[in-house]
Length: 352
Image (cartoon, rainbow, N blue to C red):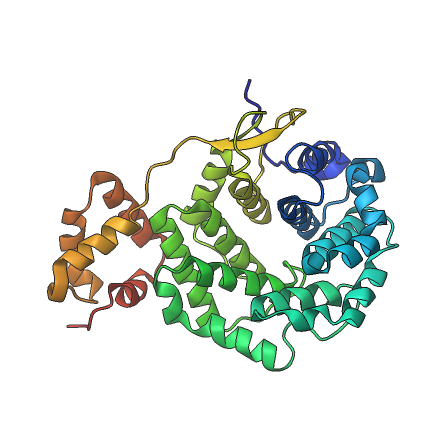
């Protein structure tokens, strides 16, 4: 039997549905202490906390033991300090007593764990977490803040497919905005970077990434394309949650979560059904492939004849594509007034 779980505004009124979901992810998917258990619980709680959700203490009971033992967990697994911090701080924001978060932040700061990070993105995440209890510099401060902003303002980077760069872009916006709690004050170039990333995600029909872009644009006080947000909401509605003991744990949990989250940020009502007991898995029927690969192959096959001028290239490209890719490309073109400029970067050809 299939049970479809989707968010709706009523979830935040009594916390009942959220409590069932929190219990299911905490106990019905992975073993506690597994790094993927930490990751999934951190993602789930973080997205609910960013929406200002409140859950009563009984609803958070499946994670109360983790909260109480967090300082010991940090001593045992300092390499996972960002996951541990995230879960504890969000549990306290969601409704557990604020008895661990400040001490945990101080413990991380005294141990200098942030100094072991090689990645600017991970340092930014750590800063954002510690600042929630007033510890350390802001995400945007100093040389790190300058490097983050230079990266997100280099729009040409985001006119080419690069999933790592795309997710770094969206997460930098999340950290600068504290997941929508403050205005990140993005310049126009950074908004263009998000627009280009959204176009690539839409062309590829990558709803996970497109949802992240839509959320980042909302946090930046911008309005995403209605076509993008409609596609994200549709993708969320196509996800299903089942009690499935035999299925792989590599499912569409993250897509289900971020598409529902982005839809809620946009103010859309999302339906819900009962969360089944047991080993829950998130499923989605195979979707139609995107147009991105076909578009890239088309340009490659044109060789030196390709141009950066979309008006010139449009009829040739459209005649090359399959019907499904043709429809997606037309929708992408309609979805953004910057499509011509995006194509100029994507085509990697001199304007003629």
